[in-house]
Length: 312
Image (tube, rainbow, N blue to C red; front, side):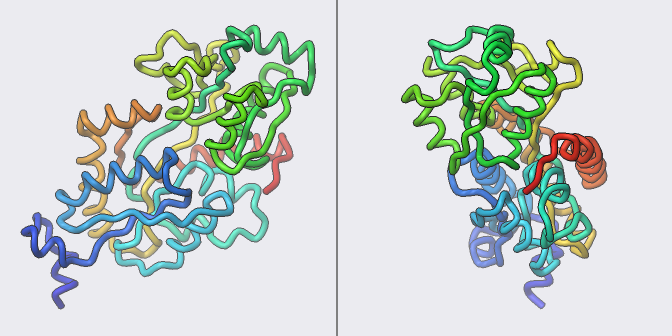
C-alpha cells in the first residue's frame, strides 16, 4: 500500500522518503557518454524533484537501440521503467529490422525531449565549404570517406539522403561509436565525420575540423554562419530526436505525472542551454504532440528507406 501511495503522491517527498522510494529508471539504449546518455542524465537530475521520486539512468546498448527498447516494452507498465528513445527506435528500425521484437503499440509516449541534427565535418585541410565538398565528390565518385555507426545507422541514412540530394556518392566506413571514427578523422585516415551535434561542435571548436553544414531544419545558435543542407537542397532534412516512452498500458495518471516533471525540466533556460551545447534543440511536448511527431517522422522516412534500399 505504501508503494501505491508513493505513485499517487503529486507533491515532493522529504529527503529521507525520496531516498527510500522506488526509483524511476530511464533506460538508455546506447553506451555511456554519447548524446543520448548525456541528455538522459541531465534530465534525470532535474526530474527527481518535481516527480517526487529518485530518477536513475541505466544503459542497455546494442542492436541499434533494439535491446534497450525491447527491455522497456516488456517491463511492468507502472511508470517506473522509462525509455529514452532515439529516432532509430521507432522511426528507422520498424522499417528495416526483420522480426523486430517490439511494435509502436508496445509504447506510450510521455514527451518529445529534443531534436538533434547531424553535422558534416571536414578536416582543416579538406574542402572549405559544402559546395566544394560536393564538387570534389562529383569529380571523384566513392573516393571521399565518412564515418558511420553502421549501414543502417541514422547518421549513415542521413548522409545517403544528402548524397542523393546532390547526386554524388561517398563511401561509408563503419565504426563502433563516435570515438573510434573521431580518432581516424584526427589521424587523417577518414575524410569526413557525419555526427551528432556535440561531437561535431567539439571538433569545430577545437579547430580539429570544420562543420560544412547541418542537416536540421534550423541553424545552430552560436554557429549561425554554418549553412543547412536544406539551404542548397530544400526539404533535405535529416535529424534524429529523443523522446521519453513508457510501456503501453501504463496508467494515464502516471504518464501525466512523468510528463509534467519532464516538461518542467526541459523548458528551463538551464536545460535548453545545456542541450544547445550538445547540439540539440529542447522541445518538451505533451504525450499527444509526441505521438503525432513520431508518427509523422515514421511516415516520412518509410518511403525514403525503401527507395534507398536500406536494410537492417
